[in-house]
Length: 309
Image (cartoon, rainbow, N blue to C red; front, side, top):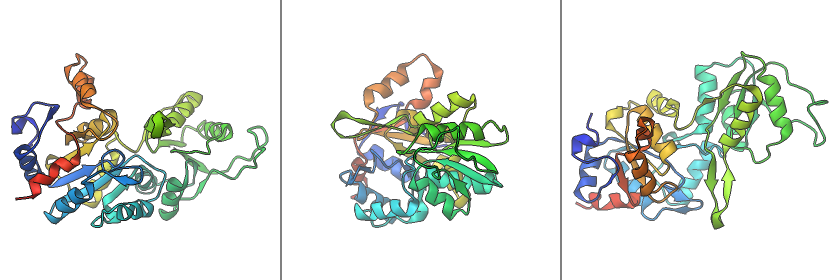
């Protein structure tokens, strides 16, 4: 495997110039997180559209792996196009909601309904996969004491839900009393940054509440679980040794890469910063090494000079 050490670099070292060029030449598959790597909200990271376009034009295989389950893939494609990523196709986009639908349909082969805690992204992907689901049918004044419980619920799927209620938590807890009922989470991201220093609680908070209520652990579909990579591998011939995972979150993106046997790169345009990566690298706890990136760049725009010659 042509990993970071094979290139003569120490882990968690910034690279640039010819080092980046050599790395890009050695890899055929590039996996990018989106938020904090490709864009911030409705603004593309400077140079990111040109980086993606250049990789594709040089024959590289580019995929986007995001734990953001709030929109279906076609909406993601619209966003890519809107922000100037004109070479991106829907088949390159792998979200936790899309992969959750694939798991329920193709792996679990669920025979029954799915109770959904989640929004449009999750529901749309389940609908397109032909999976029946329930979740938002209760009256505003309904309670767990008088609400109806759906029959034949065989799985509970938890994703980001800005309309999350105590009743949804209670109903999901009831369904999961059946040990045969699957318990899935799109992702376990704890929070997401907003403007002015505010944060948005992530899907992981809702999943944690349900885990406490039921005494069960959810199977996680999105990063850092390897299943998202398995989805890519099932549709494309992917060699892990020829892959580079590029992300901004050490505990999610770098761990995902480590779990899948991929070289990893941290870009400093998002959540995690160099100091934290170095602290993990220097830690005495061996488990922390999975959070350490092989390479670090300030931004993926640092790739651009490699395409100039």
